[in-house]
Image 1 (cartoon, rainbow, N blue to C red):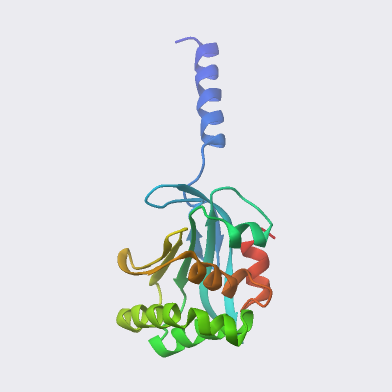
Image 2 (image 1 turned 120 degrees about the horizontal axis):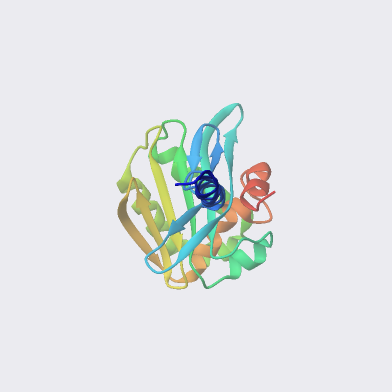
Length: 192
């Protein structure tokens, strides 16, 4: 092989390596975050990822996956396309604390009448999470949102579903609503 041919091959390999998507290109608080995710029917891209802190404690790294990156929260909330939120826990959490925090996020973003309409779905979600039980540092919660409902996964296992799009929209508001649980995390999830 000539020197020119070797240089051309080396340049081609370098170009492919530089432009190939990295599976773990993002990192938040020491947690590698995949650039893409796949639901049952759709490939999703990372919209953003960030750290959820409560007081001085690191609680989890959240990542938001969507079909196309966007900085428009309304577009994500109102979408009928699949979306995903992953939560990689950075500390142990008992079921009461985890469920309580998510219910507080729902209360912050919804009126009493809106919560009353969602009560059955919220109760079903709480039941699913209580069956999961206490979570340990390193555990991973996956929430898949579709027009049909919200699927809950824990450490790679399907744990339950809440039918209908309304609960999924409500739960997404915990992180990207007008009153998110953590405004810095919302900015990160929205690509800021």
